[in-house]
Image 1 (cartoon, rainbow, N blue to C red):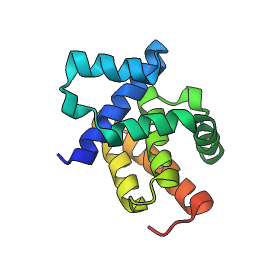
Image 2 (cartoon, rainbow, N blue to C red):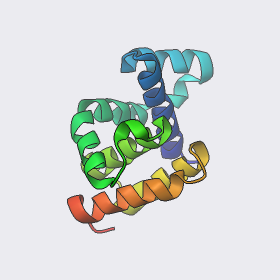
Image 3 (cartoon, helix red, strand yellow):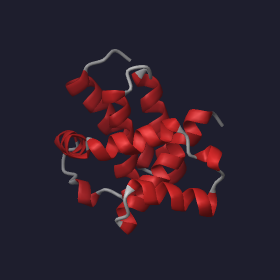
Image 4 (cartoon, one colour):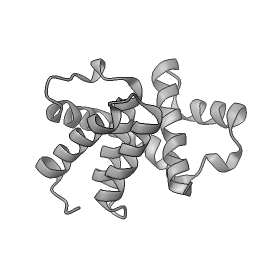
Length: 138
């Protein structure tokens, strides 16, 4: 497994914990690392994802809701919602990552950690945002 994929997985776990426990990002990073991971699991990229998602959460959530017909954020699973947030953050603020890579990584995270339908659900929403809102070439 690649370093960036591990970073995305760690970021997903931190975002999940933040949402469940209402802790701040630093507390969640520290607690997860101390109890479940080595210091190598927490790296610059995972921290960039979590801090970026938290900083731009309103904008990201609005875009997700605008492009997810018949789905409010609070009806989405916590896993799917946070994978969408990670993917959209990367699409908007990580220009060094090709959009196709971001979409594929988000879909893979959904398949691994979400439900049976998560991969296609995440693909549909991120693809729509990519094509209708962001319009970067894949």
